[in-house]
Structure formats: structure tokens, C-alpha cells
Image 1 (spheres, rainbow, N blue to C red):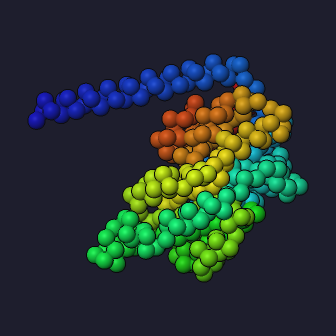
Image 2 (cartoon, one colour):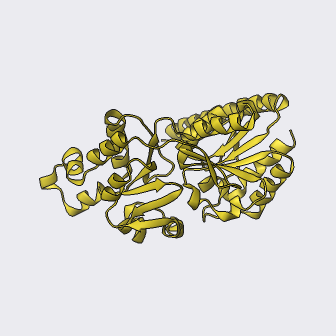
Image 3 (tube, rainbow, N blue to C red):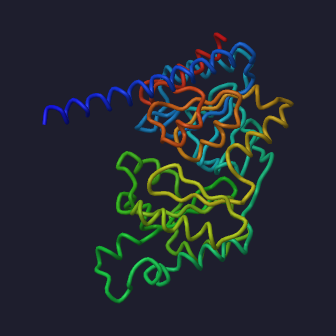
Amino acid sequence: MEEALRFKEIFKAQDIYKEAVQLSARAGRCVQRYKNMKIKCIALDLDRTTLDSQGHLSEENKAAIESAAAAGIHVAAASGRPLDSLPAELTDITGVRYAITSNGAAVYDLCERKCLRQFKMTPASVEDILRHTEPERMKDVYGKAAEMSEAEISEIEISYEAFIAGRAFAESRYVADPVRFGAMPQAIPYIQGTRTPVEDMRTFIRGHKSELDCIDLVVKSEDMKHKLWKNLRENVRDVYITSSVRQLLEISHRDAGKESGAKFLLEYLGLTREELAAFGDGDNDSGLLKYAGIGFAVANASPECRDAADEIVASNDDNGVAQGIHKILTM
């Protein structure tokens, strides 16, 4: 028993050493890159990155963003949220002029409230999504419909959100009780404050299938989410599928993605990717962080996002964005 514990401690120490070596190498690469770089644009994911776990912008992060803007750096939100769901405490900051929204499906000039670029979903892809998420089909594909209990049916139950022209619409039952569909309790004020309730979202989506920036599928079971993701990836064409939180599958046009939005914005501003710094926490941020000259993941980021980053900063509740911006300003 003692020998087994000793080997366990050895393996644990080896893992810690390996991680330390990786972090050291990553830090070394960052130092070298910092020497040859002048950041002129910062793209900020919002939820669980720039905003704290309660969905608020801390004074430290706000001050850092204001300092970056005062230094002549363009600051852009880069979010899965639609335009009208962006928090005023961020968009009201002087210097935060641009927003990459709906996971890159639409890019806005906030000062003029003008859409600079937009990819709408194809009507055919919308119909395919509705077909593959039809309730009875879900029961047949993911379970034995005739033998399923109420609890099992609840696990494969999904709800819908749709983003149109910067506005968010969601199924009434989801807006009334987000936790039922897997949302965290702290997300309730955000969901109920930004979603327009619709009784029959499938009919609503079909009636607006030529206008959609994004469809979100709200899935209570994470296992169910991955099965559904696989099914849609294999059977629906012309879509980009990602996920920012446990209960969401976020679907938009195939040419969307935060990195696509960032690429467009940089071209619009006459900048290069080497002049971009990006911050994120979710799987939907990993492409953006890889694309940027410097990618920062907050400490609470997903494994995929952390792997994509050049540097790990403090968590969203410990002002990681402020920490990263300070490094940028002192390069």
C-alpha cells in the first residue's frame, strides 16, 4: 500500500513538472513574440471572460479597457450574443466601437449602429436543422420512444433560440424556466432580460428562415448535446456549429466564427492579424485565439480554449482581462 502511494506521488509530481515545462515554454514564446509586436486591436469575449460570473464588468477590467482605448487601441466585443444583448456597461465605454456578434455572423459599428458584414443562414440549412430536431424524430433517434420514461424524455428535450437583426427570440417555456433546460441560476436575469418569448419557436424559425444570423439549440443533457452535434455535423450542410456553454449548440452560416469576424474587422481597419490580441474562455473562442497575434485564455477557460492560447491569465472573477491588457500596454 505504501509503495502504491509512493508511485502515485511520483506520477503526480511528473505531471506537475510536465505542466510547468509546458507553461514555461509557452511563456518563453510569448516574451519573444511580445518583443516583435505592436497590438492595435483587442477582441474581447464577454461571458465568463470580460464579465464576471454574475455577468458584470468589474471596475478593474473597465479601467483597463479605457486605458487601452486611450492608448489608441481599437477595442471590440467578440461574443456569441446578438447586438441587442450586449451589456451597456461595456458598449458605453468610449473606444469600444466595434462588435463581432452571433459568433461572427454579424459585425457592427456600435457608434453608427451599422452592420458592416453579415452572414445569414441558408433557408435549406434551417429546414434541415428543424427536421433533425423534430421532437418525435429525437425520441426515435436518441432513444426507444415507446419505452422511454418521462425523465428520459426530459433528457432529450430541447428548446430553441433565434437571432434576427441583432435581437434574440426564445421559446416561452425556456425564458420562463431556463434552469429546466440546463442553464445556470446566475444566467436567469440575462436570459429573461434579453430574450423575446415566442410560444412556438419552430413555426417562428420557419417563418423567418431567410433572416437568421444564428439558431441556438438549448440541450439539458451534455451527452445529448454531443450526440446531436455529431448528427447535425454529418447531416446539415452550410453551417458552422460551436458551443460556448454546456447547454448550448450554436449554429450559424458556414462562413461565420469569431475568427472570421475578426479577420473582416482587421481588414476593415487596415490592420494585420499580428496586431490583434484576443481574450476568451470557451470552445467558440479557440479559433479566434489561434488566429490572433496573441491569444489570452482566462484561467477558467475550457481545455480546448487553453490549448489555443499563447498565455493563460487570471480567471474572469480575478480580472484576467485587466492583467492581459496591462501586459499589452507595457510591451
